[in-house]
Amino acid sequence: MNNGNSEPSQLDLSARSTRSVRSAVSPDELTRLKHELLQAEVRLAKARATAAGAEIDIKVLNARLKAFAK
View 1: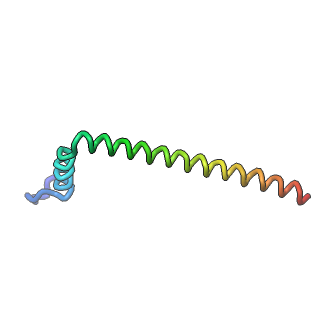
View 2 (view 1 turned 135 degrees about the vertical axis):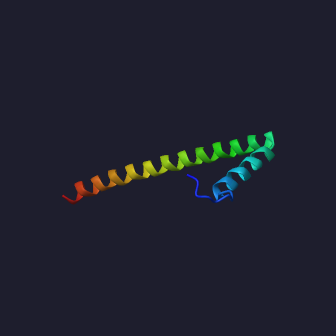
View 3 (view 1 turned 45 degrees about the horizontal axis):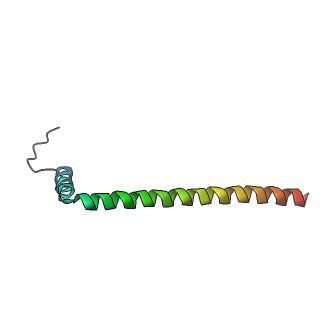
């Protein structure tokens, strides 16, 4: 849709600046960033597993408490 405005939109400007930043990243930097992302994903998976384990512990303890209270 053309609204008659000849100025580039903010979205166009940010897309251009992103492209110029991408081209300035060296292969070593890209490798390092991918490695850091992988490490962050592993930390997140571990945290989720810990949280899931804690939820199970709570359910078991609640069941034991209810059984004891009867």
